[in-house]
Image (cartoon, rainbow, N blue to C red; front, side, top):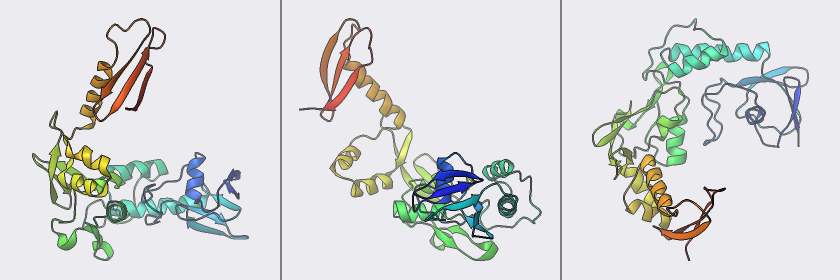
Length: 293
């Protein structure tokens, strides 16, 4: 197990771990934008650069995808590393001057503005981190969006910049976007993925009417999931709030009404699950959930 020395403090690491993973595990902050735990390291934004000792000279590398194979000495807060990260942030601010998320990160890094002229980007406030494209392709399997164009016109778009037939309206692209460029706009019966202008039919909560996702998401999950998931999706769909409410009602119904003394009772819940309660004055919350039969 190699030792990684970060800013003169030693830390244990596993072979194959990245510098960023070791730093995060030990509470050392390194700014990131294109990094997400659900995806493999990509090193597109370059905001996570640090210095490593090459034996007589120091090299600037991206910490999110630099694997640790042997003992390593790293500088996170050296003057050169900080200057490099701030320089990257200044370039990003030139492309995305109106992004509040990027502004907050810039303030934390000590960057107040940019000396570079603003770029008239084809897609406002997109830093081209590629997270949305990769999560759509690698995790969702839809590949509804991709990188298009070159230079200052490079952006993320749907094929032919038209509403994508492959989009299932899951919202994963909006969830991973680090600067809030992608947004979900809920209409009466549809959810729109902005700025791609793709609309998908909504599925609403059977109890309160709140949107719980798109119909296409349910179809895709049903086709990929096992029998339990298919059966679950075949019934009424409930939002998280109503699910919690109904679960609380079922658990409350399984508890003896007097609430005093020592009692034990089993009542069957829908789906073949039993709730067994063993309640007494000193432990009013003792509930065990198990399979029926």
